[in-house]
Image (cartoon, rainbow, N blue to C red; front, side):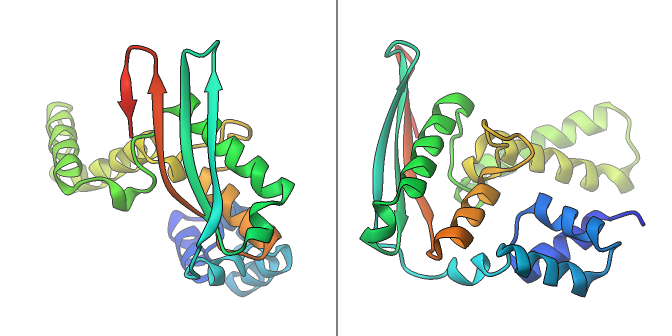
Length: 201
């Protein structure tokens, strides 16, 4: 059966698993919601959502420098305990996220961090673009919503496709690590530097 975006959204809200994991689970279970939830639990992805509200006071600050010293980043990623912060898996995750910042040039950690005035300006531009294309009024909002989603994928770290595995978004990578390590993991902040560009947070 065809898996709709709403089915994926509902499963994601129920489990906290990544979009692609939810889609895969529904496909594997022929659209059966309860079986898909069970599938995600077995994979350990659903339980990660239960940990995302827990406090994170340990972690690492990672620096990554690329391209002969012409660009680099600093990122702060937190977890719950010093024990997890010292694990090879956590260190590798933080390093990969620092690389992601350099390669994909995000401006914000997550969509909620995008200032309202920036978002409204983007929406206004999209509405003009859609109007110029002569689209009927009843589909304008849906098209604008799609363009906003694409905007988030470009400017928000958690919404970007992973540079090491483009089938996953960064948020999904983090949720998988939460499931694996059993602790909440949060990207707190980052800054990207490019020679002659100035810092971009």
